[in-house]
Length: 472
Image (cartoon, rainbow, N blue to C red; front, side, top):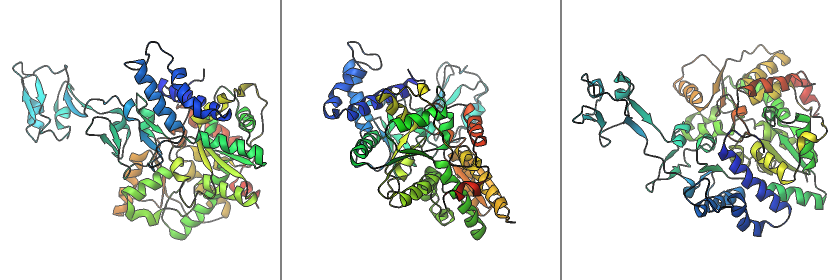
């Protein structure tokens, strides 16, 4: 069995694999009734209270694997039946409380929300508490803790709350589809909708109609599929029916070159590569939208080039990003990108065709430069823009602020909105450490950054100008 970070990912993978397998074999209509019993055979439950709830949840996962709710524009959805309705978040007194005499917690509370039992143990009146945390800071025993639902704790923009009926709910007016909540939910009750069925259909139709399907792979793939070599992964993608594999990193080279020109022209810019970051600006800092680079993302840039050379071709992006599933449906991107898969879904696609990629011969992948490839990790874009200035012989000095994660993005944008800070370029990545930690990754680990840098150094094209000259 493939190695995933959690059992939640493994369960998700199994459903995706079986859905894709059924679509390849033209039996999906019947399989939607059979897969729940395959995943949860019974007679005893292993994950939930009973076998019937397990199968009902699997059915909802199948629905998400087939595209989810078409009326919900968000790529991220809550499976209400799967939500464990975790206890209400907020500060709480634990059993560590010693019932001391000092009562510093009470003195620190500005709302009078701390009272004491007969044994002097503290209790918090939730009708008065405003979750300021001053009581927790004052307690000498650290007996007061801030308990948060995992999904709410993961969502740094506060787009998740508890519905009146207890389950999690997503505020689409705030959500940026970064997928942090879906990865952190211990019950897998929050998921990104999948287009794996659409991709299988694209591949089947292309074989019948003699249409080329291009796989555009994100550079963070270098830190995934550790059981096989990257060249074998490329061979596996082609074995699925893709005509060829193109690096999104080549699109990153294009973007770095053009973004340096736009930065020099305007003097102040925020990056446009991360769709979740761009969406965050639109929803939380709308007054700064004119500062966002007008360049497309690397995915869109290289897809546009592919379609210009093969107008009848199809392009499928494969990467770690759930926000890409929103981006490719935008009017400005939809003409160039036909669908999006995550690395999790690519693994399921391999196994739906019983492809053991570690046994395949190594294919060649060499479209981009070192600088395009390191876009996968935080700081890579800024390095690439600086390199573009160097190659152009420009005297313009980029002063970037590198934002790893949405909290750092928020701080930089707040400074920009107030006109403070010595910088002229904001590189924003919604995921901590960049795309190598995207919610759609098979695994998340410290080695990811070193793997990306190693992958970058293996590029035959050593400069950005060398890489993009191949397109002319």
